[in-house]
Length: 216
Ligand code: B12
Image 1 (cartoon, rainbow, N blue to C red):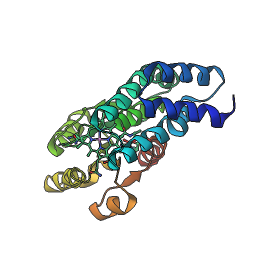
Image 2 (cartoon, rainbow, N blue to C red):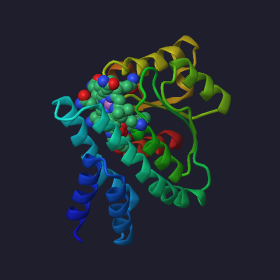
Image 3 (tube, rainbow, N blue to C red):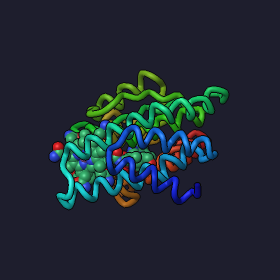
Image 4 (cartoon, rainbow, N blue to C red):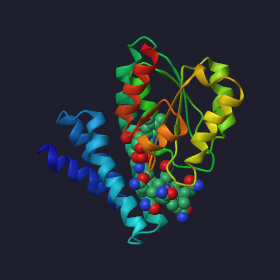
């Protein structure tokens, strides 16, 4: 099967929210030698993007969006161990405190970022979803983190990324951590406007930025 048709199969299964079809497509892709990162970035992510666009156009509603999310989470149970296998042999590269900001329950992108950072040898402290700005900073202090990575998927929750930076500034600790942001409608422009150290469009970018940050 060509790369393009396997990507299409993965995307179609996400859009339909069909766990079994998605799992079968992933098994076939893995057998055919498609790397797990490509399964996510080139197959499943475009499908999820489509789901978001259909939701915005009222062509589907929350239950369908939830089905797509559930299918995604089932798929990650197959894919995550593949990432982790690759990461366990590496020596620890740095420490990252990761989470989705306050008011935001979107976890899928954050979880991929976490899995790929672990695969690249980072020790990841994943706080989960709906995390207050102060909690990112407290955890970073507690763990001696190098990086704070914050995901936000909604225009209403993006300002929470700015709050993290404001918290650090208020404590006189802005220079202590690299703050990376990403997710949904965030952008390089937004990152620049709030004084973040980096913006990543994909989980692959998150790894590149994190490696650069610890190399400094
Ligand atoms: C799945 C989904 C849900 C699921 C989430 C399930 C889960 N466990 O995460 C459910 C159904 C629960 C949900 C709920 C809601 N959702 Co929703 N959801 C989506 C959807 C379709 C996909 C998000 C996703 O997982 N994408 C796939 C991942 C892989 O992409 P990603 O998150 O962007 O992450 C990648 C990159 O951004 C990057 N990245 C992510 N984080 C980080 C962090 C760092 C540091 C870096 C460097 C990189 C990085 O790496 C990832 C991998 O490449 C989006 C549409 C979209 N296009 O984003 C809407 C969307 C985000 N949701 C939306 C809305 C409105 C809601 C609800 C308010 C709906 C409602 N009426 O209740 C609620 C919100 C509840 C809340 N308080 O948070 C809107 C937000 C609109 C806006 N701009 O403000 C969107 C854009 C849909 C739309 N077009 O209207 N949602």
